Image 1 (cartoon, one colour):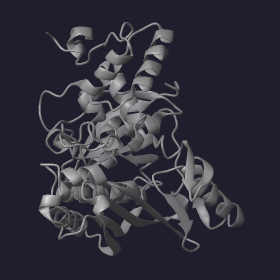
Image 2 (image 1 turned 45 degrees about the horizontal axis):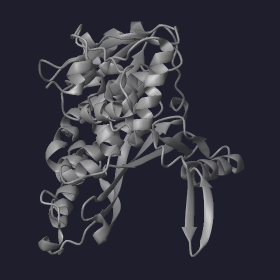
Image 3 (image 1 turned 180 degrees about the vertical axis):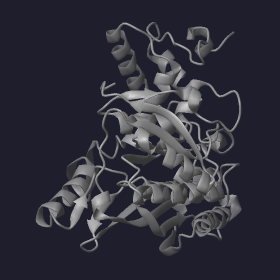
Image 4 (image 1 turned 180 degrees about the horizontal axis):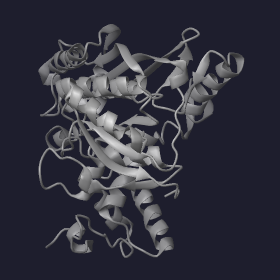
Length: 409
């Protein structure tokens, strides 16, 4: 008997399939989410079904994949932004969004008191504070827990690589100068008999792999790890906390960036492959005993030398005034990078132009792949010859993906 996905999919056309979800009940929609590794709940899928019914059409597999990564806990932080009832010692407190209460509102209060100190927050890949009259400092930190539990070296390797790219994608391209980390693992002398799941990596193996992963990536890019911390607790035996951060500097005039119609959208850096598929949705789901075997494809493959080339390209392009807008490919790959870039002005991205690591990728794989070491830039057409020469200089690939057009879509 064919599975649900095959039953509802129309014949492939131009590398995508339209999926007939209008006739599915809640259980079938939940099954479809699981089958496609969307990590969307039954309620989510019913909401999507209702939206497409209002539009009078069925979604494509590309659209469902993009919705899933965009609405994932990893990207959207729905739990972090939800109303939470917290009870301690019999006292209950209602917290209306942990993010707004303890991060956003606190930061806004500081900005109101010191408007000349916090130069930018909540608008870019990293926030900026004033260092002196000429330079600003930016800092970005985030976790890479699930990938590091599955593949400690690769997970940590690409975790630090991701925050380095966030700095490169902040403003018109900040220069990464130093990294930091905080790790939480199970005790390194944990009795192996205490670990109930068969494929879970022992905490000592996770520790060694994670430390090497962060160290190697930064060292090969010439970015030192200058401080860090480590804690041990049994709570981290099955899912470690791997928190990586990078600091950068940028001339204050280069903090601002704005999209407009008529710009060329280009990609610089590594090619696109199947590594990192469903990275955002995988990181949003709970780890279980099958995750270590089934979800290895969601862990990206890092190449710090390739990122060093892309970084040098971006920094010189910024110094020469060749960049109008820049961001990095992180969770969701081109779908998020191009989506954020073109959100207000609209534009067109041609997936056929994307350079691939291997043949046979279909549209949704190309669009949401989280292959590492990729930056996306918006530039004036007149700047393209100079940028191509710059790509040759640093031995990195430049690909023209599309353009902004002012359509708003």
